[in-house]
Length: 110
Image (cartoon, rainbow, N blue to C red):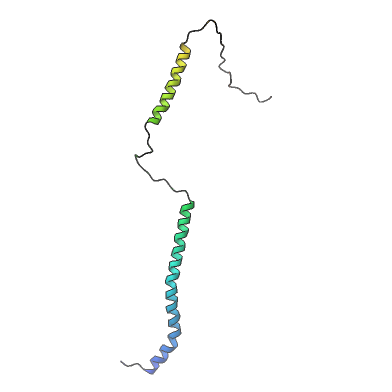
């Protein structure tokens, strides 16, 4: 199959279009890579600025068993102290009057 002169005329007139198309394809891949890179940078910047959700660590370090017992120990110690204070016999030399409403009301009128 030989090349005819009419075919050459058609090819030469289309060379400009083909060159532009090839250039746009080359630029398209680099442009696409640039767009994807910018999106990745934006996403990374958002992740840095945002508050991250905590992952479930299961039965890990966050469970401490003695915290509840410490609180209970403090309450028990306070109750024992109150019981001891109430169980003290009245001393004749010291008469102390304790008002249960003392310190409960504050007068702001001045």
